[in-house]
Length: 289
Image (cartoon, rainbow, N blue to C red; front, side, top):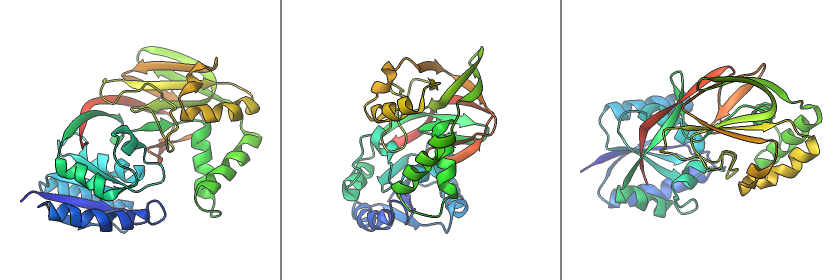
């Protein structure tokens, strides 16, 4: 019988991870899979468990959680050919949106794993680290950094308060960019590098990005007033921000992003301080979707 690993973040989605695992695990076993039921004490242990399972020759690594768990999984899976399965249980679930996976029904998501239909997609890589969705390197990253330093409140309200706090003092950032062979400097509110089209629970910042075109989508939101930034934010959910005169979009195979004092986030996780060079790695990940 095929053996797969089910790696769970029980705290994802304020406990939804544990509940989703409890629903998906028996479904997978009833379908005939031998399932390694794994849970790391922290991200370091979870990644070690994922890598050991891949080295042992499992048929697939299935993660139960949100985009953070997907981010962890791709570090173990990139370039191996071992498929990624996903039982969505996070707060954003952008990776699940990419593959049209059921985000509120873990049994239905398990059925996608059981069907074992695969799709091969690109990943983005900077040094030894990969990401699937979007790298944030501007105002959005600054908000994430502040929110991570806050102990109260929990959930989305913490990010709302962090956004309001940063808006009071935020100034446009001076970036140095290398877009393939083109170098430029620009003042902007943010730069985002997308392998896929959205982050943050459906914010379509890199609208139009394709997972399998061998390219990265670099979006620059140039300097705008703070009221204009607030008015533009809701348009990210529909992708209509692309019509704003301060929006700029490039498709490249490689980009270097440099700016002082910015810590980037990718797949919703702290990724690294700028400067970073990011390249597209075509066909690096196989997904059960």
